[in-house]
Length: 157
Image (cartoon, rainbow, N blue to C red):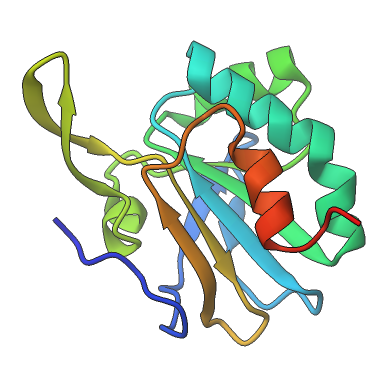
């Protein structure tokens, strides 16, 4: 299992394909930073709830200068279907070999119904414009997480 990122660490760079098959590279955005959230599987109930929460709160993140990127081990085709069905307006990135999730500490041992396996750990990392980690949250809940993140980033005024 990869080490979890800590506040102040340099966030690993990456380039991944989005739901349209275009390369998206983590890069300084000139705003407040980038919110990278990792979710296990597109079009599942929890991941759909979380993605729709990000979609519904996207204006508050972008008006504060944040870019939102969702990353899962799903294929580009599955992400395209998910984005279209749920009308998601931020990039969904395909990390099929889970290399980026591993680099971010979002891939590791999970337990579900008494079974232990390797998988994606629902996580969110907020990256400052200078590429350092502002906030890293692991094992977050699908429901209520976006609301908590907005509070943590002091976006609720």
